[in-house]
Image (spheres, rainbow, N blue to C red):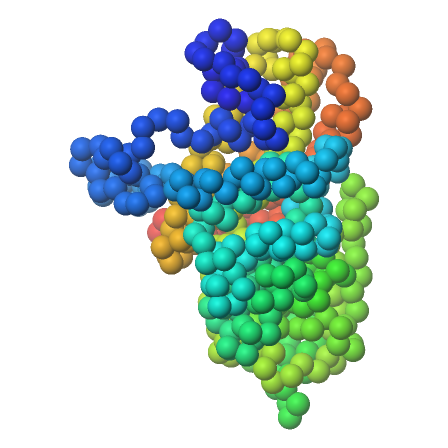
Length: 442
């Protein structure tokens, strides 16, 4: 989908057959570059522009997000990534690609690593490329647009490596981060627990200090790919009681091959087994398993979740379905007004969400902690993702079209999985509580 295509005859149309992901091409700014042509009263910075007067606000309590444009040197990464994906994925059917960042393929992750595309923003001294958050945004956008099977390395690259680099010891950094960048180890995150859900402050899994390090007991649940990962970064209680909430929480790095660890995959409605329950029974951890300072777990987790909640993966989970439907709608030659309106609705909302996600990437690139903004992106993004299958079903009903079996399989899969979009990474209720606190409303 490109600007001008929906509603034939309006504006300039373009060849919609070009590229692996024409949906995304529509949302790249084509207007003048405010970074080189500043509007009156604005303060432009390299790589992005401010379309509002300096200091403008959306309302009295929420400051405006600065719109960001991807710098040319980072945008240049798009073409080689796209060519690599076209060569590697070939004719993989859309119902498999719709797994998106839940698709597991260790060989694919290692192939990305050989291209230098894991750890793109990590420091060069640990094997990374030392590039900006915008470069990573381009890479992630292309991977998600075609539904590349990235989940093997996803969590380690997105949040575990940055966490260890920020809070871990030098020995932990040297041991773990280069292996992540080479695609040699995969990492799960252990946050949620039975009976606590997204209320992370009430975790009960406990690590008790002893003469050998830490003795770990407890359970984690909804742990993505624990059965395929080498390590887990887990939020545990090292002192106090669950009633103490944030106090006494720490994070530990767990070698999942240690005795006493039992992993049980959980099958979802679509028949896949991405999530796991993990049981720890008298697991002896070494002294250096502790990440950072004891008692700093809550600070670490909130910093980590900004990476988890703000990226394109919180917007593009249904994009393969959208593209598959759009391709068939174009090919049919139909211009049914209901389907055209739905295509426009998706394009408009995706454009706004993409701009918000880019603005958060800009904040991360400057070393800021956009916890509130990341929560907004995640909440609004997952709402969009969940609505896409319903909109497409509505369009199919309205047009009376006969969809291909591949489209129907993709629609069925996304419809089944979409309720989980607003659960993973923090439920909608938890996110809105964070947003309310950030706005001073609670």
